[in-house]
Length: 68
Image (cartoon, rainbow, N blue to C red; front, side, top):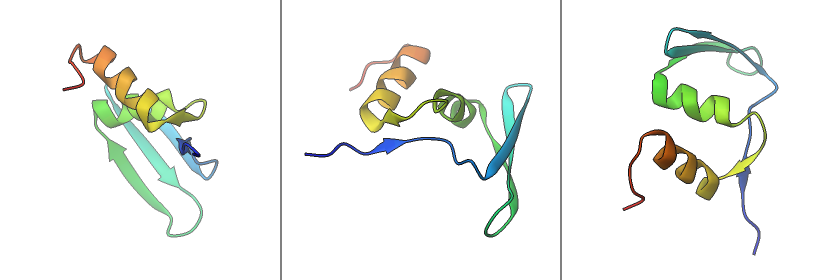
């Protein structure tokens, strides 16, 4: 069984502004997006590839919640 992994796109430039993160996709449909603090945490966590299970564990640890 193969586990999918997620990672940042090399076609996105980004910068953190306060708790938010602003990203610009400079290929394809070229657009700006603003990520809230939770989405910014996920984006920053993807500095190296992560599985969905790893991301869930990181989010649970960050926000002190159980997986249930």
